Image 1 (cartoon, one colour):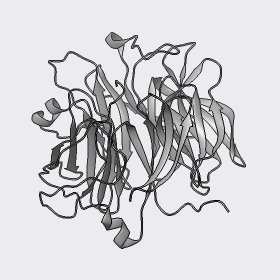
Image 2 (cartoon, rainbow, N blue to C red):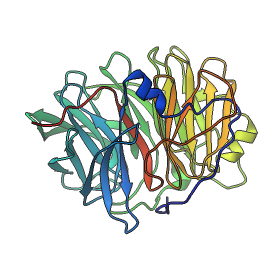
Image 3 (cartoon, helix red, strand yellow):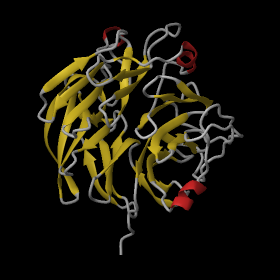
Image 4 (cartoon, rainbow, N blue to C red):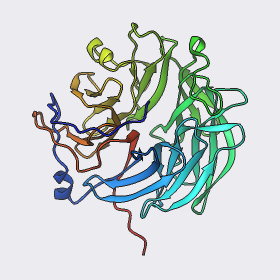
Length: 373
């Protein structure tokens, strides 16, 4: 997407979920740490951490633009992963924003913006492109040695152009959204739109393929995912086909069932403008949320019934993450918002976070990270 310009937003009328206000966390004595990538007005790139109550923890300038973030399960550190076709990812101390390490992709490789850390905290897997065979997907395998990452191996993703990787609930089985698009090194230009091979892959940590499924439309790129505790996989797509065609931009794989379209009405599909950014599942409330920044829309559905809960205008809505009572959403052109999904009223207000210039993803870390002594 084009780099965003910060714009002022007026009030927003919601149809189903309520924006409950940041004071909710103050009352409960908890304020998640929101991690994301941001740019400034001059185009400089930052890895940032803010409490949802508005407190800035850090804003660390980095050389390359980042995409998604993953935190270590035991240590107060997180990896800010380079946006495709970036070659640098950044290991950051969450207590003060100190840059601990710049991880450079190997020869003929670049990052695709996503990674996961194994539950025991020793291994990290990052989606990468093999530029000697453009688009051949691999997971770079890295090992934590103290608070540094060392590249040890790579395993195939059994597809082209891998984007997001995630864990199934057993935290041993990997899920990969292979976008299906070939790109050259240092390029975001699509090389194979007439021969795309998008797929959803389940695989073991050693690279063994368990299953590989595709949606009916060849030019529908599977990009982002959210995994529910019961093993339900929800994916968001980006359609690369003709503008007049409709595409299934939200899909689902329930346990024991095939990968298939989520029941989204044509009105909402058209409003997405063929592009989705982030998807999140709220396990307790059994909801799924989706951002569509090109269509300037934010959506929430009932995960089990497929019923639409919210269809709201939100200019350049970016990252979305589940919190105790709903969702937090960032905006590339406006204010960040908290949607309290416990009640149904029409009141809305913004979070006290900086407006605009947020990247397409956010990552929420529950619990405090103590400042260093």
